[in-house]
Image (cartoon, one colour):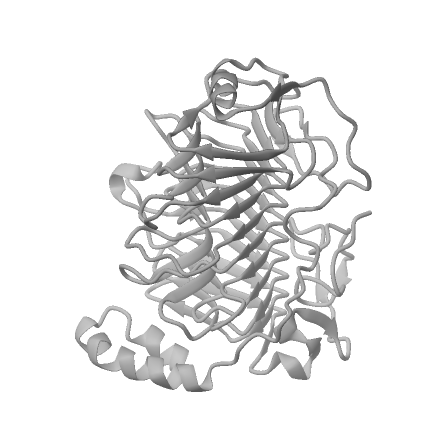
Amino acid sequence: MVRHARRRLEGHPNLEAVALPVLARIEAHYIREPALPLRDLGKGVRPLGLTPQDYDTAGRPLPSLPAATLPARQARRVLLSTESLAEALRDARAGEVLELAPGTYRLRSRLDTGQAGQPGAPITLRAAQPGSVTLEVDTVQAVVAAQPYWVFENLVWRGVCASDDRCEHALHVVGGAVGVVLRNNRFEDFNAAIKVNGENGLWPDAGLLQFNTFSNQRARRTDKPVTPIDLVGASHWQVLDNHIERFIKLGGNGISFGVFLKGGGEGGRIERNLVVCTPEAVAQRGQRVGISLGGGGTDVGSCRRQPCDAEHVGGVVANNVVAHCNDSGIDVFRSPGASVAHNTLVNTLGVMVREAPAQARLQANVVEGRLQQRRGARLESLENLETGRLAALMAQPDALDLRWQEMPALASRPEGVTTDFCARPRATASPPGATQAARCEAP
């Protein structure tokens, strides 16, 4: 009830000033904390890497699977220093593999890509073995990718700035950088580790973010946006199989998101991710939203659509597990044509669809919380399971053990949602929510 009261105060600054401190004290007393340790459910970085990256006939990157063994070594250019890395990023050609030797590299200034890859012959920057290379970032943004068909994989990107205002982005994908793939990386201690936006009238469409882990060691003390995956204006991105956690903002308005698509793009998919707003101290300051189509809105000058009348059109949010957020688990803001299907929400405010022209079809979700619509938004609800106490239905949901105690009524398969949380084919009728498995195992 406290969380709902706080939501109802939005837009009333005088009431917020009086009531929010009182609500925060009440919430801290009654809030439900996670049951540690939390399961990773097979999401985020995979220890043996992923199967080779492939592309469809239109040049769009296809999702991969966790590898059963370390992939065979490719022909590659081995890099031994930060200086050689900067040079290689500038002059690498299509099909080239840039492999950093095991070790730690300090980046004190921005690096830029210089040449374009091609579908089926991308330029790849990688570590041979996941976790064997750490890039320590002591600058506002580490790498800016402005050319198409680059792949970044198996790297640890760690912000080490003295001020949280500095370590903004590990990777900034801009302009004509279509078909960029970010896979099997670990990102730590950034405000918005991945930033994607247009530049000079070009938009970096059709990217893929898969099997990455995003986390911060502590809350970010900054007025700047805190959103690990911050995608503005680009279309047809796939955000799949990532583990996103601990994105807490203590400065500014205190609002943070795990991932959002906004800025007038279309056709994005946020699917099969594990999002844990905070794995401890859920009641600490700030408001944390798991997944959003629309985020907090976009300035007109940064919006792809003119007039900027919708934040994201036709987005899909499916097969995600979202947990331990003191605000909405899933949020749809000024985004029409949204499909929100087969998600499992644990210890969040539920799903919020807000402000016209927002319109969302909610189907076969398991929601500990409520389904809400506000300010002219439209919500269609089909076969959802809403509950105030998920522990009565699942084994230990607060620890992310989501096995059913007793199988619920089956839900029909939503259009366009053909797999489950573990990328297994979904039957024509299956239980609501993301998964029946304790975790997803590699094939």
